[in-house]
Image (cartoon, rainbow, N blue to C red; front, side):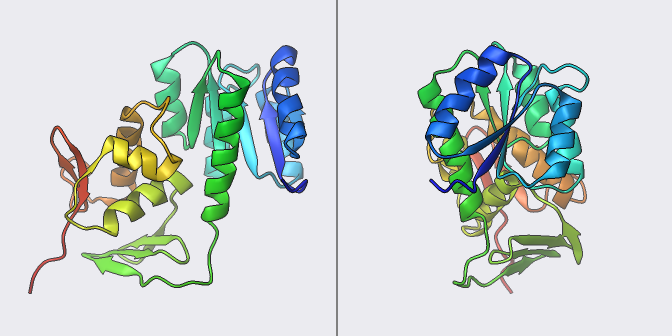
Length: 236
């Protein structure tokens, strides 16, 4: 693994910092530590990071607020949230603020390393490629797959990596129904350890960004009891 990959590890517990820093450095990553939310934002402003591992429970500013501020600055850096216990609210809030993934404490180092590798792999896959794929346009929505750019009625819309991947999967197969498990596997490579309702949160985010009326969507349609599908082009 290239040493240029830099990870910001934010946790106020020194024992957790030590536990997670060792395997990350052993895997060849550079690790920068922060013990609270304000320090995390300071470190992030000072240098480029390829991944942020962010505990929810932090002094000064909690992880949810740090995540929100990173996303409001238009940063697309992958963010993995660490949540205590099995707190559903923390998970939902983290995803609402733009986190890409979450891990519930306690977790194994093996699972943690797997999640980190997957997040970095997804980030690398998300960079523009030389091969081309034709953009699609439908009813005012334009998706440029090569540039990973989305616009609605000619207004650019900023999507997180996960949001774009879900939208792209659905849009490439208009009319096809995707279960939540299928979308989890498409984005994260597997559905293990992940709540299928994670997809519902991202779909809600997408609808808020793309739909005129999120409660009555035009593009991202619910197939009750099954999953989601993208609208089919009108036949004319």
